[in-house]
Length: 362
Image: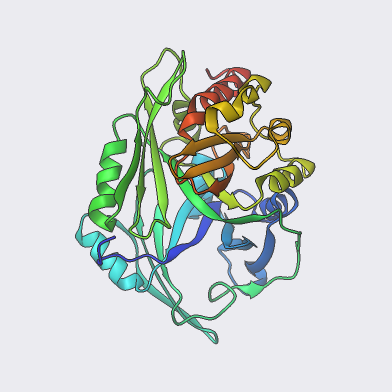
């Protein structure tokens, strides 16, 4: 990445939710996240309640507005529970804001400082697709639990399931908007195009989508952007846009070093995944080459496999995490492969279409 907007990595993803306390319990009991910090009425915040949930290097922040006039409450009414903020750790939040807005980004939060006995936290934010923000966080002079105003938590201490890091964050945008956002990330943040999948690669008899993946110069931040393609029926992206009331984050991929163990634990905790037909696993090694994992176990759990010239990956997708068919999670284990499961796109798309048909939305 060019020098003007260096990024250290993902800092956190902030969800705007209707009931952060209940959501924290769900992500603890269902996904093994630990509640490490809290801000709300008990800490003196009269406007927002937030729970910081962590596992490995992953940090999720679940926030609820405490009155109807709060931006969070209005977002939940419009989008349902959704990821509203992609927070990136940067060496200088002031510079990141200045450089990105000078190149055309719309500012959302000007450079801000918050201070307590643990130091100074600096941050700023710009707007991207839909109502989503990218927040720049500078922790160089802050050593607290998360941010000023938060207190350390001891509750909801669940055992993790092996989720290690955020692999990529996928956005869905309107027809014709994908290239504009690819150009936005290139111009304002110095991102480059990593991969491009057209509607021939991601299609079925009924529907299709197109996708481009942008990344920062280090390769730590990968942001695929999807848009619908014209088809006979409603695509998964069109369904997402309808129920999300516009563009937004469709899913996040979380890396694990042992996807079989991770998915086994998630299933035991009640997490539901897209169904993969047994026929997918017939002649699997002939299609993708030799893999270390037992195919019968992958078939039992519904884990998909794909390969590129650098290696292979294993991946699986949850059902939507709420009543609206919008946000879902992906678990991914990479063995050298840096792709996104292109060989699984058709199988995945067909699985999603089966769920769309059950909902009456195909």
